[in-house]
Image 1 (spheres, rainbow, N blue to C red):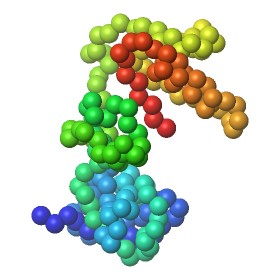
Image 2: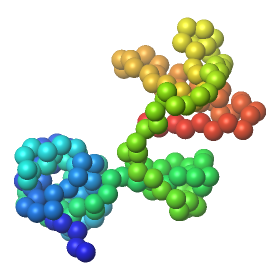
Image 3: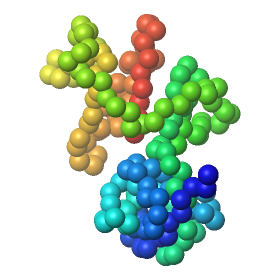
Image 4: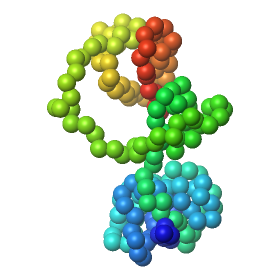
Amino acid sequence: MLNPTGKVKSVIGHIVEVSFVTDHPSLYDILVLENDPNVKMQVYNSKNETTYYCFLLTPTRHLYRNSKVINTNRPIHIRVGDGVLGRVMNVFGDPIDGKGEIDSFDERSIYRKTLDYSSITTHQEILETGIKVIDFFCPLIKGGKLGFFGGAGVGKTVLLTEIIHNIVMLSKNESISVFAG
């Protein structure tokens, strides 16, 4: 079956307006440029029944009005499993660390349905970061998430680098930490 094609109506920064006459894309579907499949965009909203707003995920080379795009009929999928541990990947799951291909054939959509937290039973355990101020004022829970907000030059990167060093490098246990940014 041929994938449906659409046309680029406009490009404003990283937002691309695409129209489809038939076989409309679903939310989060990845669209690729017909003459350059490396140019990828993600459907994130609809303007009307035939026009969609897409977020450009790659540089805008070769992208212009009336360019044809092809719907891949699937959202972003990324490789999962033991083969991705210790690897650096881009948003599409392609390795960018110079260590060759990733030894994992299993992949999942990044838009999976989340678990209902009320159905999960777990004990909460504090994750010691080795930074006394963080451990005292805003302790981290194992399995939880952490985010930093702040202005330019206030030390977000330094703080995150120190936390990564303390948790990953100095830890003697078999835990797994995932860092994204």
